[in-house]
Image 1 (cartoon, rainbow over the protein chains, first blue to last red):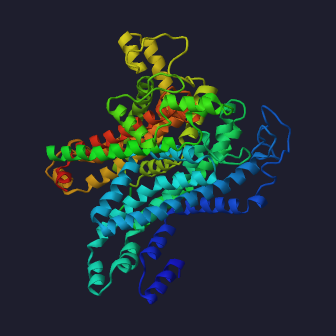
Image 2 (cartoon, each protein chain N blue to C red):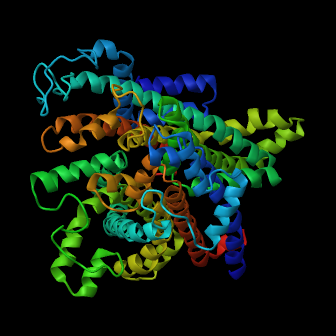
Length: 298
Length: 334
């Protein structure tokens, strides 16, 4: 008996399969999502155990200062940077920052986006109009531009960056959840719950939200990938974390972009670290979207 | 239809007012100020105050905004603090460069993306379909600036096929009546200059157009798949129309509808992407202008640039919605 059959049997015994366990089953059969998960898990492991993975301290000078630092070798896998620091160790530590900013900024966006979207969708009327018009205005300003504005206004630093990326996600989540709630609000099961006496917060929290949140989850996953890219982009424009020693992938690419002709390794390794981590997240997000809505094969 | 357009235009007013307030407040909240940026950290209190008085920064904020909004309506965006030139002139100079780049990028995205998505849908689940999905996913996972650097490295530095910075060879002289260099070259009848401008456009356009390309391809594929399973396509086939006619008249025409929307919605992405692309390729456009304005606290330029960016996006979105309502009558009656 295969694992799948065994699981099917257990489930038959338990009598029901929820949306999420169903989706998880489909996700496991999607090769792209599995590959993405492996990549993301690897990045998480590297980030968490960075001090064990990295052979050197990311800010320790282990080689000589050089205008054209040496490239990859057996001793220094990713070569050295212009300050003689082990570049592999710096890229490894960079994973911490990227994953952290990705998760925190999306969490900030979710917190406000879900609250606003739920209010607008559930209450309707003028509350809906006011919230959604404001979201429209925010959406009309391109995300990166808004982030640039916020970071320049609040000053450079890790928190302003995460806040900025979080804020630009708010209208996206709010809009998505509102639409989803509107679709659910008139469903029969909501009517049934209402006729049984469920009101206000309970109706919204227990009945509508769990059913309406699926598209927001997918978007949140994909937003994490975008967040990593946006943090890197801010760094690239010189709006990254203020500490010059901070190993951030986008900043590494930016700082070394004028060495394109001589020390390509200083650009390519952090650059591909961004691509690989974002690709992993996108693969999961895509798989999740298909798993939740099998009709969607786009 | 007319009512729909009018309603959308009326809705534009609060959005624009909100936008101008938002931008105004943001710019005021920047740390430091133009006086400090202009005079340096060690400026005396008196000289700072003199500059602020001259720029009207000593008045209450709401008065500053009203003055600003009044000027805005009459098309006066103030003057750059750095160059003392009117912001409108700065925008006029920079705008064609960014638009030319954006157009080239979109052209690349559509010309490559639509056929790719269409063929992928026709070969649904085939090798080409699968690989186009994987490629487009890789495409949207690339930070624009990194892709730009790779392209620059491979095609400009290593192979030397294309120029790496600027819009035109520095030794070349060309009149700029429109500011669109490709157009200017054609007007002047200077074919070598035209080719030079195009060669300068290729790498930035590919860098900027890759993400839209991936999105356009995915949307085209999904839309084509949807249309292929429609009853009217089956009917058309059943009545004996040649497959190529069915494809052209029934499938393509309907499948391109959502693509129109997506192309419009990419405007914001293109404009912000332009900021990054322009930086890598030293392209003298709006993005470069905004980044400079930020570091110099050039309020007027920054304000003008941000409002202008947002305005383009709002207008394009409106255009997309209206054209969509025109193509799909169901929308109008919502």
